[in-house]
Length: 114
Length: 114
Image 1 (cartoon, rainbow over the protein chains, first blue to last red):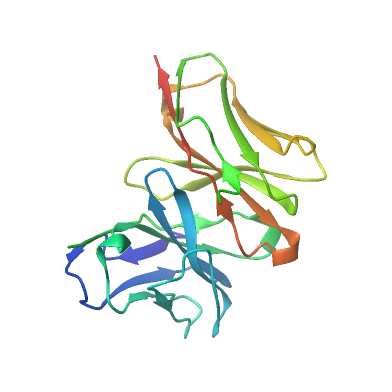
Image 2 (image 1 turned 180 degrees about the horizontal axis):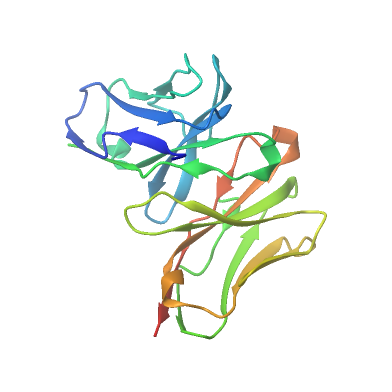
Protein backbone atom coordinates (compact mmCIF):
# COMPACT_ATOMS: atom_id res chain seq x y z
CA UNK A 1 0.00 0.00 0.00
CA UNK A 2 1.30 3.43 -1.02
CA UNK A 3 1.77 5.53 2.06
CA UNK A 4 3.63 8.20 3.98
CA UNK A 5 4.41 7.10 7.52
CA UNK A 6 5.17 9.48 10.35
CA UNK A 7 6.37 8.69 13.85
CA UNK A 8 5.54 9.42 16.54
CA UNK A 9 1.87 10.25 16.05
CA UNK A 10 1.66 11.95 19.43
CA UNK A 11 4.43 13.39 21.56
CA UNK A 12 4.58 15.54 24.68
CA UNK A 13 8.00 16.91 25.47
CA UNK A 14 9.64 19.72 27.40
CA UNK A 15 11.38 22.86 26.24
CA UNK A 16 14.90 22.27 25.01
CA UNK A 17 14.77 18.50 24.71
CA UNK A 18 15.85 17.57 21.19
CA UNK A 19 13.43 15.45 19.22
CA UNK A 20 13.07 13.98 15.76
CA UNK A 21 9.89 13.23 13.88
CA UNK A 22 10.52 10.59 11.26
CA UNK A 23 8.87 10.43 7.85
CA UNK A 24 9.10 7.62 5.35
CA UNK A 25 7.42 7.09 1.99
CA UNK A 26 7.28 3.92 -0.10
CA UNK A 27 6.36 5.48 -3.45
CA UNK A 28 9.88 6.31 -4.64
CA UNK A 29 8.93 10.00 -4.69
CA UNK A 30 11.59 12.60 -5.33
CA UNK A 31 9.83 15.46 -3.55
CA UNK A 32 9.10 15.52 0.17
CA UNK A 33 7.93 18.32 2.43
CA UNK A 34 6.99 19.15 6.01
CA UNK A 35 4.03 21.29 7.04
CA UNK A 36 2.62 22.45 10.33
CA UNK A 37 -1.06 23.08 10.89
CA UNK A 38 -2.18 25.66 13.42
CA UNK A 39 -5.67 27.00 14.14
CA UNK A 40 -6.51 29.98 11.95
CA UNK A 41 -3.28 29.64 10.00
CA UNK A 42 -3.89 26.60 7.85
CA UNK A 43 -0.96 24.51 6.64
CA UNK A 44 2.40 26.24 6.48
CA UNK A 45 5.44 24.77 4.77
CA UNK A 46 8.51 24.27 6.97
CA UNK A 47 11.05 22.63 4.66
CA UNK A 48 11.01 20.72 1.43
CA UNK A 49 13.36 18.48 -0.49
CA UNK A 50 13.47 17.98 -4.21
CA UNK A 51 15.70 14.90 -3.98
CA UNK A 52 18.45 13.25 -1.94
CA UNK A 53 20.80 15.81 -0.37
CA UNK A 54 18.68 18.70 -1.75
CA UNK A 55 16.66 20.61 0.84
CA UNK A 56 15.28 24.13 1.01
CA UNK A 57 13.41 26.36 3.41
CA UNK A 58 9.69 26.82 3.27
CA UNK A 59 7.80 29.68 4.87
CA UNK A 60 8.40 28.86 8.56
CA UNK A 61 11.80 27.11 8.87
CA UNK A 62 12.98 28.76 12.09
CA UNK A 63 13.72 26.26 14.85
CA UNK A 64 13.69 23.24 12.54
CA UNK A 65 16.24 21.17 10.65
CA UNK A 66 15.81 18.44 8.08
CA UNK A 67 17.98 15.96 6.25
CA UNK A 68 17.53 13.85 3.14
CA UNK A 69 20.17 11.16 3.13
CA UNK A 70 17.91 8.57 1.51
CA UNK A 71 15.11 9.02 -0.97
CA UNK A 72 12.46 7.44 1.21
CA UNK A 73 13.21 9.28 4.49
CA UNK A 74 12.86 12.93 5.45
CA UNK A 75 13.14 13.46 9.21
CA UNK A 76 12.21 16.72 10.91
CA UNK A 77 14.53 17.70 13.73
CA UNK A 78 13.74 20.11 16.54
CA UNK A 79 17.11 20.79 18.17
CA UNK A 80 15.70 22.83 21.06
CA UNK A 81 11.90 22.74 21.00
CA UNK A 82 9.94 25.69 22.36
CA UNK A 83 6.24 25.98 23.25
CA UNK A 84 5.52 27.90 20.02
CA UNK A 85 6.40 24.71 18.15
CA UNK A 86 3.39 22.98 19.66
CA UNK A 87 1.49 22.04 16.54
CA UNK A 88 0.20 19.32 14.25
CA UNK A 89 2.89 18.30 11.77
CA UNK A 90 2.40 16.68 8.40
CA UNK A 91 4.93 15.10 6.10
CA UNK A 92 4.07 14.83 2.42
CA UNK A 93 5.60 13.47 -0.75
CA UNK A 94 5.02 13.84 -4.47
CA UNK A 95 6.30 12.20 -7.61
CA UNK A 96 6.84 13.82 -11.00
CA UNK A 97 5.65 15.80 -12.86
CA UNK A 98 5.85 18.50 -10.24
CA UNK A 99 2.92 20.52 -11.38
CA UNK A 100 0.36 17.84 -10.68
CA UNK A 101 0.58 19.08 -7.12
CA UNK A 102 -0.86 15.88 -5.77
CA UNK A 103 0.84 15.63 -2.45
CA UNK A 104 0.43 12.45 -0.45
CA UNK A 105 0.25 13.28 3.23
CA UNK A 106 1.05 11.27 6.32
CA UNK A 107 -1.49 11.01 9.11
CA UNK A 108 0.13 13.73 11.15
CA UNK A 109 2.19 14.04 14.33
CA UNK A 110 0.74 16.07 17.18
CA UNK A 111 3.52 17.63 19.18
CA UNK A 112 3.13 19.41 22.51
CA UNK A 113 6.07 21.29 23.97
CA UNK A 114 5.67 22.20 27.65
CA UNK B 1 0.84 37.91 4.84
CA UNK B 2 -1.75 35.34 3.85
CA UNK B 3 -1.37 34.81 0.12
CA UNK B 4 -4.22 32.31 -0.06
CA UNK B 5 -7.36 33.16 1.86
CA UNK B 6 -10.45 31.21 2.72
CA UNK B 7 -12.67 33.76 4.40
CA UNK B 8 -15.39 31.37 5.51
CA UNK B 9 -14.20 29.22 8.41
CA UNK B 10 -17.30 27.06 8.19
CA UNK B 11 -20.22 26.19 5.95
CA UNK B 12 -23.35 24.16 6.64
CA UNK B 13 -25.37 22.59 3.84
CA UNK B 14 -28.18 20.10 3.62
CA UNK B 15 -27.67 16.78 1.91
CA UNK B 16 -28.43 16.92 -1.79
CA UNK B 17 -27.86 20.66 -2.09
CA UNK B 18 -24.85 22.43 -3.57
CA UNK B 19 -21.83 23.33 -1.45
CA UNK B 20 -19.73 26.25 -2.65
CA UNK B 21 -16.36 26.84 -1.03
CA UNK B 22 -14.46 29.98 -1.90
CA UNK B 23 -10.80 30.89 -2.04
CA UNK B 24 -9.00 34.13 -2.89
CA UNK B 25 -5.33 34.65 -3.62
CA UNK B 26 -3.12 37.69 -3.85
CA UNK B 27 -0.01 36.46 -5.67
CA UNK B 28 -0.48 36.88 -9.42
CA UNK B 29 2.40 34.44 -10.03
CA UNK B 30 0.28 31.53 -8.84
CA UNK B 31 -0.70 29.42 -11.82
CA UNK B 32 -1.73 26.08 -10.37
CA UNK B 33 -4.47 25.61 -7.80
CA UNK B 34 -5.58 22.62 -5.79
CA UNK B 35 -8.19 21.59 -3.29
CA UNK B 36 -7.50 19.16 -0.48
CA UNK B 37 -9.94 17.52 1.90
CA UNK B 38 -9.10 16.65 5.47
CA UNK B 39 -10.96 14.39 7.88
CA UNK B 40 -10.18 14.48 11.62
CA UNK B 41 -7.10 12.49 12.64
CA UNK B 42 -6.08 12.00 9.02
CA UNK B 43 -3.76 13.78 6.65
CA UNK B 44 -5.15 15.96 3.85
CA UNK B 45 -6.02 14.16 0.62
CA UNK B 46 -5.92 15.63 -2.85
CA UNK B 47 -9.32 16.36 -4.34
CA UNK B 48 -9.09 18.34 -7.55
CA UNK B 49 -6.83 20.85 -9.27
CA UNK B 50 -6.89 23.46 -12.01
CA UNK B 51 -4.24 25.12 -14.12
CA UNK B 52 -4.40 28.85 -14.82
CA UNK B 53 -4.90 28.15 -18.52
CA UNK B 54 -8.36 26.81 -17.69
CA UNK B 55 -11.36 28.34 -15.99
CA UNK B 56 -13.12 25.14 -15.03
CA UNK B 57 -12.25 21.57 -14.15
CA UNK B 58 -14.76 18.90 -13.30
CA UNK B 59 -14.43 15.52 -11.63
CA UNK B 60 -17.65 13.78 -10.79
CA UNK B 61 -19.52 15.76 -8.16
CA UNK B 62 -16.65 18.21 -7.77
CA UNK B 63 -16.04 21.23 -9.98
CA UNK B 64 -13.44 23.93 -9.51
CA UNK B 65 -13.88 27.33 -11.13
CA UNK B 66 -11.06 29.82 -11.59
CA UNK B 67 -11.50 33.54 -12.16
CA UNK B 68 -7.99 34.87 -12.77
CA UNK B 69 -8.99 38.50 -13.09
CA UNK B 70 -10.62 38.38 -9.68
CA UNK B 71 -7.91 36.09 -8.25
CA UNK B 72 -10.69 33.84 -7.03
CA UNK B 73 -11.47 30.17 -7.20
CA UNK B 74 -14.33 28.13 -5.91
CA UNK B 75 -15.12 24.48 -5.33
CA UNK B 76 -18.63 23.28 -6.06
CA UNK B 77 -19.90 19.99 -4.69
CA UNK B 78 -23.14 18.78 -6.22
CA UNK B 79 -24.97 17.01 -4.73
CA UNK B 80 -23.49 17.29 -1.27
CA UNK B 81 -23.35 14.15 0.84
CA UNK B 82 -22.81 13.67 4.59
CA UNK B 83 -19.48 11.97 3.80
CA UNK B 84 -18.29 15.26 2.33
CA UNK B 85 -18.21 16.76 5.83
CA UNK B 86 -14.56 17.67 6.31
CA UNK B 87 -12.16 20.60 6.28
CA UNK B 88 -11.33 21.80 2.77
CA UNK B 89 -8.06 23.54 2.01
CA UNK B 90 -7.36 25.59 -1.05
CA UNK B 91 -3.70 25.64 -2.18
CA UNK B 92 -1.67 27.40 -4.85
CA UNK B 93 1.73 27.07 -6.47
CA UNK B 94 3.76 28.88 -9.09
CA UNK B 95 5.80 27.80 -12.07
CA UNK B 96 8.53 30.29 -11.16
CA UNK B 97 9.23 28.28 -7.99
CA UNK B 98 9.14 25.02 -9.91
CA UNK B 99 5.87 24.25 -8.12
CA UNK B 100 7.98 23.34 -5.10
CA UNK B 101 6.25 25.68 -2.68
CA UNK B 102 2.60 24.95 -2.12
CA UNK B 103 0.79 27.69 -0.22
CA UNK B 104 -2.35 26.67 1.64
CA UNK B 105 -5.33 28.64 2.82
CA UNK B 106 -6.69 28.43 6.36
CA UNK B 107 -9.41 25.94 5.50
CA UNK B 108 -13.20 25.82 5.50
CA UNK B 109 -15.06 23.28 7.61
CA UNK B 110 -17.99 21.86 5.65
CA UNK B 111 -20.84 20.17 7.47
CA UNK B 112 -23.40 18.34 5.36
CA UNK B 113 -26.46 17.37 7.35
CA UNK B 114 -28.87 14.58 6.35
